[in-house]
Every structure is written in structure tokens, then in C-alpha cells.
Length: 119
Length: 111
Image (cartoon, rainbow over all chains, first blue to last red; front, top):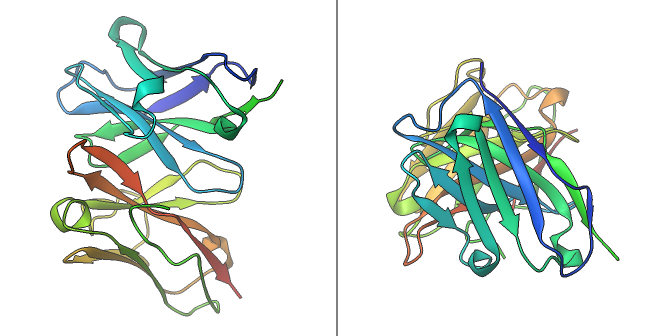
């Protein structure tokens, strides 16, 4: 059974750096073809893909946010960490992590964590 | 403005059929697999269709997917009130900076 869960601060101030952790079980991020992605959703708006890390440490980023994002993995801890610098109120959103197979789908999703950016 | 274009909303009566379109280009839908996601109110998205037309285990055959050229379509038959949700298409965009893209989402109302 594959599960993922996001954790991190619920409130960050503008200009601060956000660090989110995705802790998963039921699969290994050292297995060929496996990836973990981050997707966010501002309140009442559409899904927006942020980043994806593969089993071989290949990393992909949203072109519009690439300069602010870093995704890393800790295979031994079954965790993927996303950092986003220079947070702004427009970054207020629910952030999801999701399991990906070969990068062609997101088949298991975490419950999401709401991050509010406000002073 | 999403790279993939979906209608903002669709509606139909219980028991009827509805289709949701997702329009893209040769750099995304035209050359990559499309997947569809259902997001019920207040919940995380759920995979409905992958590789254009395949259903994960547990997804009823009322849900179907197809792709033609640079467009994809999600079909839902025998509509139920429990199908009221937002639906998103997604795929890779193989442009200069390869990245995943989602459609803008479609709100399905079952009247």
C-alpha cells in the first residue's frame, strides 16, 4: 500500500524560504522508473506542477519557478524535500506530493498541506 | 493561462453522458501520454485515466479516455451525483525545458 504525507509550516512570511517534506511508504525511490513530484493548488484555482525527482536523481522543475525551487531525496528515510525561496502571498496554496511512474502519471497523492504566506 | 485548454464547466443530468475536452499541441498531447484526475471537493486529486485510455484498478468503466492528435477527451457515462468534481488533464510538455503540465480544470455539475 502506497501512502504519501506532506509536512511543513502552515504559515510563512514573505521573502522566507519554504521547506516541505514528503514522507512516503510502500515503495522505494531507488526502484527504476519511480519518481515523486510536487504539485500545488492555490485556493479555488487549478493544479500547478512544481517539480519531479526520479529514482536516478534526475530532477525536473517548472520553468516559471525553476530559479526558486530545489527538490532532493533521501532514499534511506523515504523522504523527498522541496524548498521554495522568496515566498510571496501568491504562493499561498495547498501543496501535494505524489508518486509518479516513469513520469507519465501521478497515481498516488498525499492529502496535501495548506501553506499560507502572510506577514 | 494553462498550456492545456479545458472548458471551465460542463453539466448534465444524472444517468446522462458527458465529455470533457483537453486541447494541447504537438509538444505535449501530440507526442505524450495523457492522464486524467478527479478532484472531489476538499480532497486530493485521484488518478482516473492514464496512458490516454487506461483505467487504474478500481475505476469503473463509466470513465473512459481517448486521444486524437493534439486533443484528449474524458468521457463519463451513467452520471451520478457523486461524480460532481473538478477534472484535470495532464501530460508532459517536451519543449526546450521538459516539464509536466496540467489543464485548467473542468467543473462537472450533475444537475
